[in-house]
Length: 309
Image (cartoon, rainbow, N blue to C red):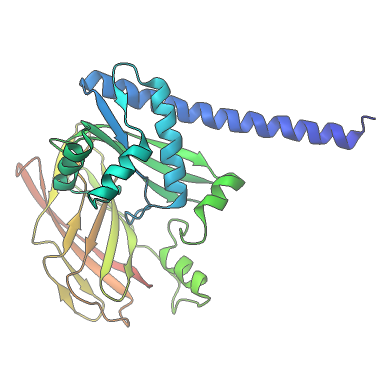
């Protein structure tokens, strides 16, 4: 007997299937775009590494999305080969080489030599309230140059939310999310300073995290000009906490440094030395070069909140 309730359930089921199909179709369109760029570059092999959070850590959601993207890319592979991720993982494990979204040029070249691939696809994820923002980059393993890049917003369905888990805080609330996970409240409300723009480049602070052994500050760098530029951060970059402690020559991670217009790239700066647990804010002085010294600049971003973890 067909009831109104059974009809409603059937309709909800159809809607759910339609939503899944649309999301998969959008993801397929992204992989198709990337496939065309790889084909146009003339490269014959590509590998998809685990997607990571903004700190470069592989996550359950990152592995799931990387697997889905790899499968979708394979269906669009015309003229190049997609390396099986399981095989890639075995090779990397054997050589004790980790792959994350924040890898330096030396690691990229070594990855290419060991795995026998010409290009790699990396991805970083930023969870928001209604979606997960995914930034994809295709890098040449020999030169570490950017071959292609794009972004995609993954709708935050129940499945995606379950995969995110409690260890991945929602963007724009780094410190407060960490304290909520620990069951404590921050001393003061978390307020991120605004982005700073210089030389048509936008520097957006994402927060700092003190692990006890080191403190890392995170930024999103976006090229606002109409042309691609190479940006490198110099040794004069330094951090100063709200107690006046200065940290010179920090460890800087900025991928290949190639910025295409309107595509954000993640920057992380890690202190060489312990930051006191009583420090609540960090000030960053970022010194940079554009296009291998054609232009030099410096920006100061003050009062970046530090979360304790």
